[in-house]
Image (tube, rainbow over all chains, first blue to last red; front, side, top):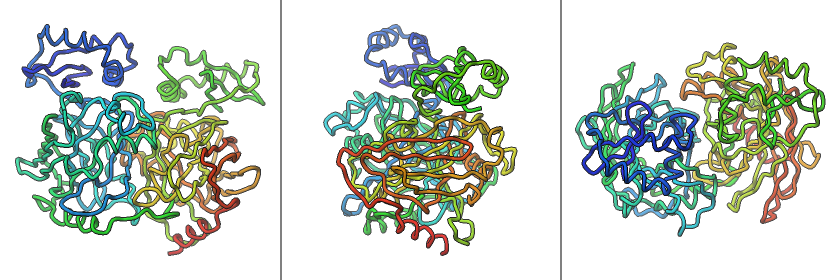
Length: 311
Length: 297
């Protein structure tokens, strides 16, 4: 099932004929405090809502996708957790230590929205196409066998990344938390529609030019392992978003006026626009140097540093 | 005003040795749990202040019950990287911060649970915490930024070292229970100079950290200006101002930890480690020296 947020504060199911059936009224029974509660409520009560949702879709009366304004499917995820480099990228390196960082939930942008490049003097602003998991229930210390039970569905994600900011020698990842830098959509596809999340094709196109183009089969650690690990650290909640990392081969700049389309096969595609008041320019096309740097680093994986730098 | 949240979800203001229940002043705020309630309460503090003050002036304090953190689940938990001079004469380092899991917060009297991860050590980091009171973006780096603050509280930024790929930041500080916070949200009118506060932390009664916020490299207004140049701040967000690493030490099973910020409050928690791992007790001098060396580079 495809579940979308659209127009102003409405939630809908995208039917097989690409019409959007408004189901917002079904969610009023949970007495939402605000529109940000609608999707998490739907996720939390999804099993109980099955019959009513099916009834709505059968009744029909939806509006064509082309006539609605899709929004970010989650108004404000309670957490956005991102995995550090999690693809082999054509190397034969040993498995790296798992590591993650958090992205500001205020950074969300949805289909058709504009990513605004800040005045900060970044070396470059990169797109990073990713598959992201939407969590379906509260979860802590998941076993590998139970990990997929905690998944609600998937979205396509563009983890926009400002490079070269922050203190040297430690990567704070703060360059990924600028407002509008967490672009995702076009809707949430429930997990039953994605039989194998480790066999999805991810692409990103900038002004029609192909950049990233890779398969989730190349992940170093599959989604079950990511969920097991992350839930050993922090409690997961319905609507938390976990970005599974990107394949850096094919990264490129985002700059003023660009249209960037992120596609995950079986999930969907969404476009965002880029605005930069400063109209800075970078070389167009794939950033080969960035891809080579990641591959070179992969041959010398960084070990954990006991008692290392602190904060 | 010192606002507290009790274990049975009442709102109180500290008075003398007790608390006056001021829940009635916030009764119209709809909520589901303390998690979504406190950001709404905090956002409304300024407009309700006169009414709350009147209730406190006429109310009879009763014994202070058990408390939750004043923000049990901040919308965002932001932490500054090393932000104290620590007796070095270094140039100011580049300002930098990172996000921790907001699900790591516990309240006064809570228990820090050391996880089954092979950390090289678990350190305490006593810090001044800022609580955001209103939506804010691009705040100026002067006293006008303070208008975005709901107030101050104490935080212990518990830190597992040696995990992850690049240093211990983020993941080693994001375990559930790793951010004790409280006991009260202290409004800015009670803290005339946030850059002149003494921060101390003791473990089992033995002094460890003891420093002044006068030693911050980037002060509170610069912290607010920096982070709001990147991300929108929202009511209930918590920003940790960093620690002075001179005086860090191990946390281990059975430890009783008490931190105090003069004029802000005292926060006490205990530590449990089901694996009963042991580290040397006392101040971690090696860590302290490493941090000074970084500073003088």
